[in-house]
Image 1 (spheres, rainbow, N blue to C red):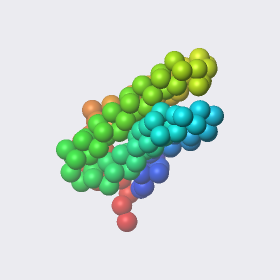
Image 2: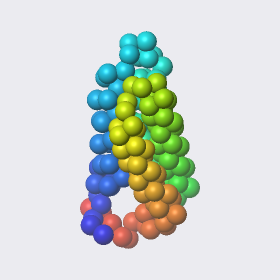
Image 3: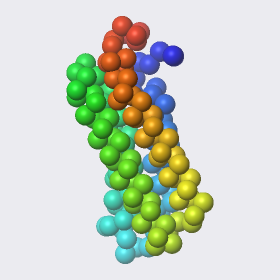
Length: 131
């Protein structure tokens, strides 16, 4: 495993950031009447996945707090999948875009669940180079 010094080094952080940016770009085409509902909600939840990973990394000295923030991140990822389903049902995104986002979030959720299930490894500072 490569040395991870910062939350930005985590693959789950990088992937969730990338997908949140994809959602931002796609949501630019949503109708104006969705601005304060679907558009705002899908942007907030997708960004929250990444933000909660950052917070988890900062709380890894306390394993239960680490797990709690990763669980929040997982919940936000699942919420984002639901907003994507609404966007697809309303024909704001096409089937290919929907499936792509759904699959990417399933992958992110899998990474989060693995981190939760192996929390002792992530919360052990002996496995990281710390200066």
